[in-house]
Length: 374
Image (cartoon, rainbow, N blue to C red):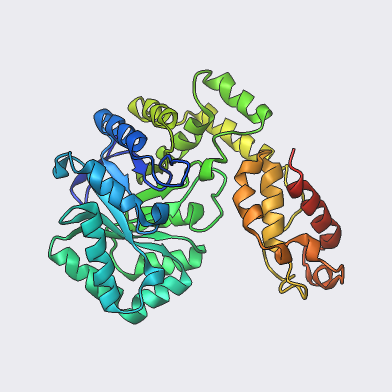
């Protein structure tokens, strides 16, 4: 198993980390504990030693199940990561209450890697206003938190502000070969190297979108490594960055565990030829977008409630990957009054659009495509 050393923290982690937010489930939605236990056992046996959960995963059940199933192992044989649900915290007392609840559910006296969960502008303001850091830094001095960091979802400017605020032990960002300009992105990665802050990576396969690609792209990957999965190219792209210490994969089946173990037990950084192949794949995928919406939101608010940027984001993503599964949750979860069918074709959006898109026509096309995926 490929390992990475955290020089300042004095730890060595497996490059593959087990993300505990997508465990297999039973028909009633509960975690399938029998299958999950087998998957965790297989990962442990192969040398995976980083397990990442959080307060809200699986409706609050992930921490409980992880605590129960990992109890049989020597606590010093693996690293446990979980996260403070900042959006639920309104007082310092809340920080303590949630932390104590998490320790109890995880059946442990300490957390190896504790994160302030999903920080962005609003969450970061709350952290500073309430004094969250005072509380968690106190837990760290007591040894109940070994390493303190944050996970992040916002733009680069916000990321830089947070990262420079204090000396963090680590941080966790979304990063994959399609999202190099999204959120923290390439600039965020470079900043972590500059400030010497180790990285844990989430969404390396973009929620599964990079595990199954259009056939013409997959053919180019197979030509280079016939026996390698499409997902392995995405994982290796992330793992080829030297400041990445853990690549999280939210594994939901035994097959995914085995494929990931194969990738990281015999880990090979990308060759120049493979890197070029991925760059060409990115160009191909991005050429499939249906319009040039940048998400600038100049078209918003729509007088009739249509969520124009989100609709185009889902529409473009669907066509980019030729995979309705990549957008089904977002489209089916969107309220009917926010969908294009609510458009009255007033044209206000087109007058405001700096890209001069044919928004009214595109909305109608998006509705038809997403309601009747191929």
